Image (tube, rainbow, N blue to C red):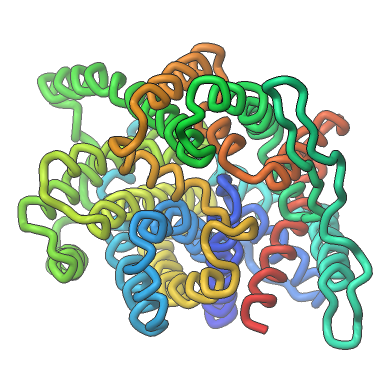
Length: 532
């Protein structure tokens, strides 16, 4: 049984890394993949008529899910380097082994540091504060009850039907293409200062699936963004800023929105700092932060290896000793905050805290584009992995699995996903190319705009800041609105349609297994296209 659990862990870690590598670079959304892995496990063993212990299912799912969050953190930030320095990025891509080695090494040190932080804060968050960690509870309930076999079959229906759809759309060996890739809704037209482009609807199941899973949270902001681009930004450009190209105007306007969100985030720091000082004075700030066991030689060696490998990697990319101390210290603080928030609401706010660490570093140290991108990516990967590890520890605590056993499988997940992510990223980027509709990398483009904001027209930048502030006041997510402004209309439309489809069903959760199968199948098909 142990060998089977290890085998499933390896398969799931690879599968999660593959699926979420594509999704994180194709869309601005990174859904948790662990519930999908549970359904796949139940389906697989139901079909094979085999029995497996709940603890084995939990270990394989918890180990495998790390690949999903690691790939998400990497996909959200690392492609920023391409938009900042295409020549350097392409020179790395020209050497596949070097490219994969960099991403693998980076994932290992960032994931290892995330494990170290998770071990240190586990007692405080899971025991002292008893945070719910809702994804962990969901996983345990799905495994323990095992009344989700019907949902597992729904996932299979979504997976198989989407694969058939993709084959008929793209063709495969003897099967010729018979389904169009898109449908034209309107031809371009103009009314006064408002110009409406050609609008097409892509027959792209993955977009509908991600939109459905995210629900109205993504549909409304993206719709606002898509409409604002043509009804607000377009007229402003044509009337007052005709000396700028449409691309220059839009990038400056969107940069203002990014800056607005960054300023809003930093405004919360003084209160957080005051709260931290109060806790320090009261002696409760770090009362629950401790090693997973009593300090011993094995723990010291483990952490020394992680810190030594991290320092060696950062030194290779010319980080000074002071900048390394800064990165590790502030990543640890932000990782704690990311995990604490995710423990309450189930959402990991990776991008916001990556910005908190990245922006001050740009002013404090003399760093280049590679180092800036690595700082942001390090925080996202470390924070995401630590959060996923604590979700897994919640499952382990509820299932009665010893922490030491859980830790071994989570280390296995970090290792397998790190070995996989570099290869998958190279294949996807080499085939689809960053910035294309298939690999738009909206999160990375947004970070690139923030880094280069000082290069834009300041008046347009101020307009973007004002618009971002207005959106925050009416409780619409400026980041997703920004995505709707920048992303091609056909991609936004697919996500919007998927999000609004949730309004057509009474219980969205009943359809999530089907749509989980859809996005997993479509992601795998895109990877198969890349390697064929």
